[in-house]
Length: 114
Image (tube, rainbow, N blue to C red; front, side, top):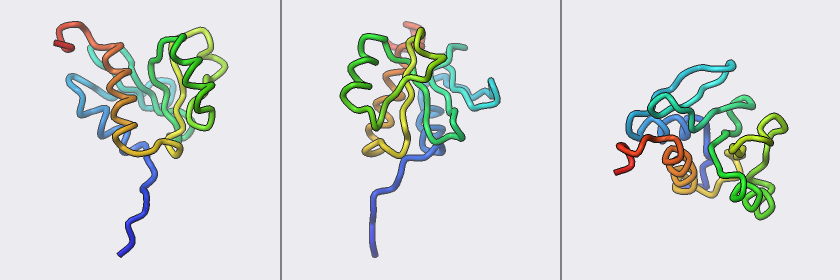
């Protein structure tokens, strides 16, 4: 039996995002969005082949420069603290979980972070 590397999918994003405390999924702008306490922390745009997550602008620039095959900034998000992530470029589900958790922490209220 052959066990190859499975590509990260939008189903993985959905499962991990919804496993985080008090996360809900809501369709907005004709795409799935994930929110904690009403604040968006992830979206699945581009036919769900990528995701957008919260990312401080200073860190975002470093991410995009270090791994442009994985991260980029959509033109309409240049002024905000969001970065796009190509799902197929992620190494594994642990990396996906880390990215989603980091974004969730930026949106979650202090009471959930404790």
